[in-house]
Structure formats: structure tokens, C-alpha cells
Image (cartoon, rainbow, N blue to C red; front, side, top):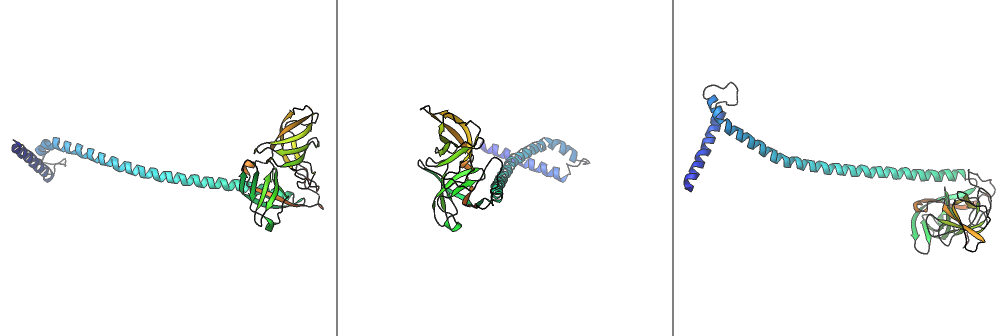
Length: 296
């Protein structure tokens, strides 16, 4: 039985091969075929249709995998191009921000060149442990820096140098708990006392205020000039809140620093104050040749 089935299969295969040969040899695809071609074409159309459908299906099946592979390759290429574009956009934004910061430093140095002898430095490290808030600069004694020099930014006070090496300097930030600077209210010229750090990037405190002191939110706090480190009139911050102390005799104010210590990248060090020159007075700030100190 199996043998008879195999013979039938061979016979059918041979018949199909012969039929296809006759179709090809008689020009069955041409509309002007004559003679035996037309009957053969009519007889062969079911086979031809099945062959065409199968061929189209196989072509579509393998084409799907080919197209899918090409799409995956194109997708990966697009992802790489997008990543490269995002990288260069980020680089351009970084350069623009750096140019903005350096431009602000240059403008400040130019405006105050007759008042201060300034040197620019870059922040290359930061220590924010439980005890100190300090940064490390890329300039030191070879650039004329020394301990107790005031460090500023275009926006205002940063801190003071507490340690130096030939090529580095450590700066105790104004927000450190051990930092303190004599301060006054710019609008009223009232000099109430001391601004101290709290250890937080966005908060200072003004202490020892008389209970009837004229101080209110929104007023600007500047250095008072008492001491030996910070020149008078440097911007410290803005009063945010005034609250009474528990003794009922004094009050304190919270002050938002003028400098964003979380984004501190470049600073200026005041190497000296030019006492023989009148200071340039930008709007909202004052400067004089009388220096001012930080107390602990």
C-alpha cells in the first residue's frame, strides 16, 4: 500500500514538472499564444495559481524577517544618533553656562578693578561633613593667596580662606556653623550684629537683634566692615523671616544667601583692597576701603 502511494506521488510530481515545461515551451504567459498553448494554460491555471500563492507567501514570510532585521538595525542607528545629538546638546549647554559664569566674573573684576585686587579660582572639591562646609580651590600661595583672605562671587559673599598650599586653598563657606560675619541692613543702614552659618546651603541666621530693631523680610543684608577680612558692603543675602527669641528681649532673622552654594564652580579671592582708589558702587551694594572680619 505504501509503495502504491509513493508511485502515485512520483507520477503526480512528474506530471506537474511536464506541465510546467510545456507551459514554458509554448509561451503560455503571452496573450497571443495559439494552438495547444491555450488549452494547456487553461488546464494549468489552478496549479499556477497555487504556485503563485505559495511563492508569494514564502516571499512575504522571509521578507518579514529581512525587513524586521533592517528595521532593528535602523532603530539602533537612530538611537545612537539620538544619543550623540543629546550629548552634544548637553555639551553646548554646559559651554553656554560656563561662558555665562565666566562673563559674570569678568564683568565683576572689570567693574571693581579700582577697588579690589582680585584673582579668579575654580572650585575643585567640596567637603560637606557634619562638622565643616568647605571647598577647595585650584589656586594657592603661588597665586598670592593666603589665609584669612575673603572669597566672593558676583552674587555676594562666599567665605574665607582657612588653609593654603602652593597650588590649592581651602575655603570655609559662609554657611558653615563656624562662620560669622558682621552685617547690617542695606536699606536702613542699621548694623544689628552677626550673620552666622547654619550648615545648610540655603539658610543663614542673623543673631542678637534688639526686639525693636527695624528689620523685615525682603531687606538686603550686607557686610558691615567691622573686622579684618570682609570689606564693607558685600552682599550677604536677603531677610526671609524674623522671629522673637524665647527671652523676649531679642529676636533673630533667617537670611537666604545671595550665593547659590549648591552650584558654586568659580570664585574670586580679594587679595587686597585698593585704599587709594574710590570704589565702584553698583546698584544695591556698597564698598569701602575699610575691611571687615569673620568671627568664630
